[in-house]
Length: 117
Image 1: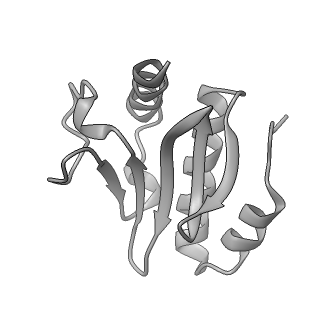
Image 2: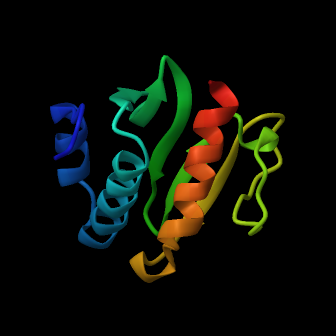
Image 3: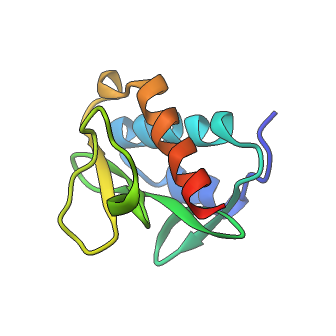
């Protein structure tokens, strides 16, 4: 069961190139596997996920998808998955679906949820 699925996000993903669609869908599923409490919506032109506050987002581009964390700079990242130098935001860049490390990514998502709790 997929909780809080937003039809606008389905439509957004359908317009992406097939390989980017696959990565985006896989990351989206990981988000919902980690927490059934996410609210999914389109914010700033991309799928965004929150639980009362913004937690993370999916930012597809031509050659990769970023799983971004609004407060990524504050997260514990033992596996050094996060990239970026912004004051608060960080992201995990995925170029191929095979690069997705489900357990490590779920741990980051869980950390982001707990940080904002």
